[in-house]
Structure formats: structure tokens, C-alpha cells
Length: 212
Image 1 (cartoon, rainbow, N blue to C red):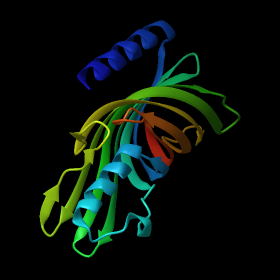
Image 2 (cartoon, rainbow, N blue to C red):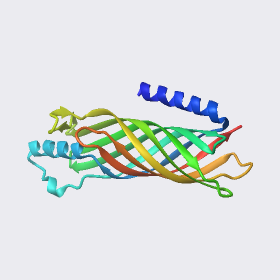
Image 3 (cartoon, one colour):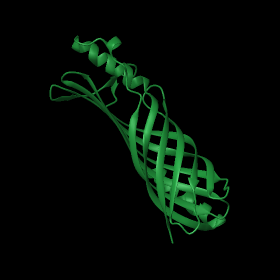
Image 4 (cartoon, rainbow, N blue to C red):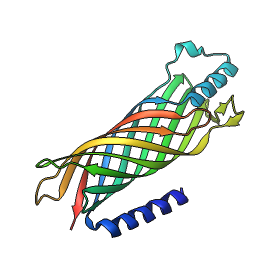
């Protein structure tokens, strides 16, 4: 994660110096993740449940959604190119059966570059970026915490720190002389989880305070 942060700072500083900074903003955002597909998590969970002998995986539907909340910093330049750094936390909790609960969450730090196409107060944009994701998966059963093991790698995937990349598109409402900028954004993520990569979509609504 430290290497990613350093790389982002250098990238932002170099781009700002060459293009000229035009604005800085901070804000919060929240939304929902859908289509979350983590093959290693699913096979690891199936193996754990088989050892219990009290649960049929055919009766269980793996959750593919998570709630998400985060904060961000936006940096604007003269070239109508913006950079943002975001901290996000996504989580999901699912009851397997009475006494057993699956929990997984994702804490991430990401950096993106995006190009805007202003039309009056509307500010559509597209962008791409990189992120570091700290993933955690646990099963709580009868008061005990159990790790999830990837049967293909024969290693615990209770905790993972992985790299990912994303593409996004959104639209902001940039009102003149008004310091708050609301926006809506769609983001497609790919993260290099154990075994196979995980992919999911993310929709966020947020607001940015433009600093003087």
C-alpha cells in the first residue's frame, strides 16, 4: 500500500506542476456494490460447510452485494483533467444457518485520473485508476471464528492484501459560486484475489466541498 500511495503522490505532483492546479475538493460518498464474484471465497466456504456435515450448499445463495462508504479528495487541473484519491470501506454479513454467520469486507485506497466534458452545469466524466484492497473473510460459528481456506492454493484467505484496477464514468453538478458539488458515479472493479480475480460493479452517490 505504501508504494501505491507514494506513486500516486508523485503522479499527482508531476501532473499538477505541468498542467497547473485549478481546484481542490474533499467529500464523502456512499453506495452499493453488485455482482461481486469471488470464486476462491465461494469454494473455500463450500469446503468449510462440507466439513460440518449439517449444511447443503445447494440451499445457499452466495451474496454478491456489499454496502460501501468512503471519503475522497479531488484535484483539478487546467486541462480539465482531475485526479482523486479515495478511501472506501465495503462490507457484507450473511447468516448461513442458525449459529453461523459469514462476514467479508474490503478496505481500499485508490487513485484515479479522469477527463471531464463540461456542459453548462453538468460535468460528465470518464476515468481509470489503481487501488490496494485489504480483504477480510471470517465465519463465526457457535462463538468461534474460523478461517476460510482456498482449496486450490491450500492457504487461508482469511486476510488478503491485493492490487486492483478500475474504470468509471459519472456526472457531477457544478453550480457557479456554489461550494458543494453533488455527483453520481458508476465504477467497474477488478481485483487480484486468491486463485481467480474478482470483479464487481459499484454505484456511488457523493458530494464534494470545493475548497477556496
